Image 1 (tube, rainbow, N blue to C red):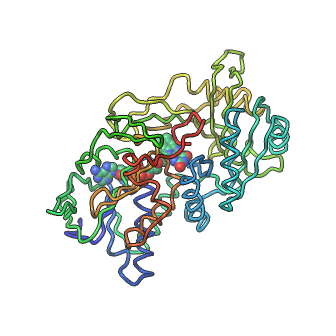
Image 2 (cartoon, helix red, strand yellow):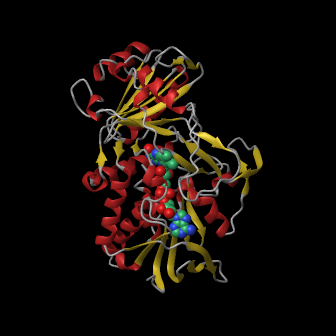
Image 3 (cartoon, protein in one colour):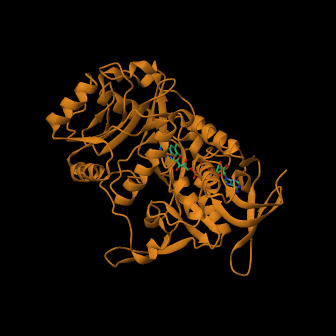
Length: 437
Ligand SMILES: Cc1cc2nc3c(=O)[nH]c(=O)nc-3n(C[C@H](O)[C@H](O)[C@H](O)COP(=O)(O)OP(=O)(O)OC[C@H]3O[C@@H](n4cnc5c(N)ncnc54)[C@H](O)[C@@H]3O)c2cc1C
């Protein structure tokens, strides 16, 4: 049964919807102005049915943009607050790059130091080699001249962390309802949403709505009557007219089935997540050239092997998202490329191509016009958490949004307001080949 009315309606039971619901219940309780019983979360499928449930789960603070870096520090704080419930593995994260990325990663490191985020920087091929071979004696990627080793961050198990959050919500009295699809919004004369329409009936909204729809962001954008194309004002005063507000990318991910313990550090410990970008030519183990242009991969120890991905593929135009993530279109070359890259990085992965697991992996992500999140009120009482596919790691955004809903300001979210496209307050762009760095 769905309730006839609720003070707060949250749409989407992924990372953001659940984190917002849980943190809002805490805020209401602590301020003595309500409890989890005032909140209902709706999901058309079930908790974790969207991008959160298939995320690689990497948690890192390698962000060139000051606002992303500061927000991520707050998110890591939330991960670290309850690693058991969130199934968080604080193994760290190592980003390695070629000369072209030296200035970006150095700037990130300097900011880490300013904000008190624990990381180390290694510059120059010899220093990088020394650090990496100390960690992994079979490290063999050459021509890598910069390495940023985050001692915080790491990864979490996707569906387990969703369950951890959902359990916290339910313990706080929040109703998390599966199988309820939101089909529209009823608007009052002042443009506020007065009710949420669903396929199971109408829920009157007493106070506020939060939408956290992940890849379905464009669909909700349309439901709220927001513009599908926008003018983007850049910091230099240029204007790019009529740009699509939403685009899609296919994220390519895969895994090899090996004993997970074969991927360990020299000391026998759990390895950090590795992200390698390089312009060294990439060959398969039998000598076929895959590419001689800049390429990149990331990988981590998983429950049943080693899992990771590579640069995503752009999607032309629109896409059918349901049933999610059935639209995944992984490049046929991906297994060859990813396994060759693992072997390029570490001798232990030589010959791993036959161990590539042919399983559905990866999925579609939805991106904003500048590839950064929009966290903002979209109607007077509708807050949008539209993370531009940055956000499994962003568990702390829900905590910030809960404070906004309770009337506080949230300076960490201000740089992500929609208005930035009109005012030109865009985020700086890095030299990384990924749309989310
Ligand atoms: C393959 C892949 C790997 C990724 N890896 C990482 C990573 O390692 N680290 C990282 O930080 N990020 C990663 N991301 C990005 C991250 O997964 C997403 O940014 C994040 O999970 C989005 O969370 P969300 O709560 O906004 O949306 P989702 O988790 O997608 O949740 C949205 C929910 O809304 C529900 N819904 C949709 N429409 C309706 C409707 N009409 N009515 C009711 N409910 C509805 C859906 O069923 C879904 O459960 C990855 C993404 C992909 C696709």
